[in-house]
Length: 106
Image (tube, rainbow, N blue to C red; front, side, top):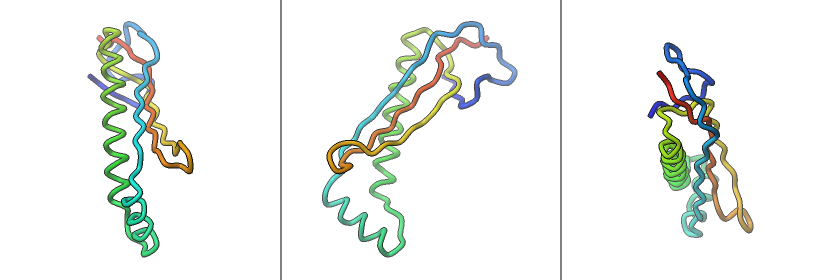
């Protein structure tokens, strides 16, 4: 499946617009990981724990997005937008939402 943040694919024709598709992933954060991430942030280091969780959430959201596009019979998704949010009580969860337009290319 071809994925793009642009509204069109150079050299390809969009023959059918199937509709908007969305993939979402919400992951809880771990209190011990949060504590160590805070220590790393204080000393100026990167938080590898959060980076891994965000990468996992993004992979899940993109897989869900593509699965929904396949269900509609599309072979590409254009105009993809990725959003990150902190949700839940006291920001205890991370959400990645990916949306785009499922299309058929020729």
